[in-house]
Image (cartoon, rainbow, N blue to C red; front, side):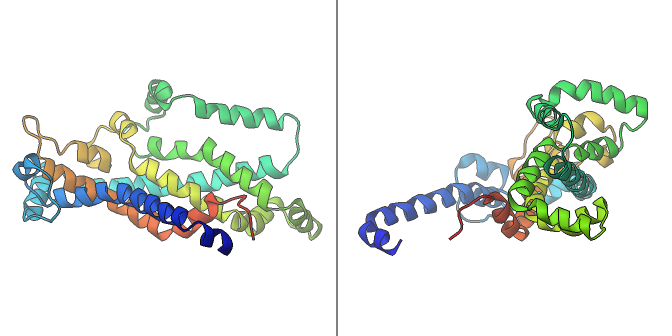
Length: 278
């Protein structure tokens, strides 16, 4: 590797330029969002600013005058956090069953589960809305939380991790020692599969936190609206205050940044499954 770097210094320079450019492309939109959150509607319409303005408190007062953004913040937490736990537990259980158990029709059932990923969520929304009405759970958080227990993408990812990283001999050793299936799952499989579980949990949290369509359809009470709906409601009927909207989006994005930054190591471990070691 050292010889390659010495012979190709120009390639290394281009690689660093590419990576820095990619980082800037990712960072600049967030930076501009934070800057615009401190600017007035007139200033934003006049051009691009690189330094913060003086209208942060004014934009915050505009938001508070139109919506209860912190109530929306709490609603998003109430929806997202239980959804992540449900998705992680049930997906890991299902993935463990498909990875380590042998039964007739296993592959067929697995492909049926994967097939549900090909169906757009919007196609089943009307039927799901009718089901929620019959169950009496419309305008509650339950219709937004319970479907997370069936996460086909998470099942696929965790199953691949278990098959590639956890040997059958470990499960067999637990059975020989007299351990039950749940004990093996909780004490052996789940801790070892945590990189994959954490990786997909991050993505599940992001999807749930940013979900706009489902809460808009399934919730009727404004006090229960999560952040995406609350931010959308910042728009006035006859005017649009971009500074307030940027501030609302910035407040909404902060938890996602915290989650990704906190669990970034687990995310990297999960995404490098099968990487060459050396």
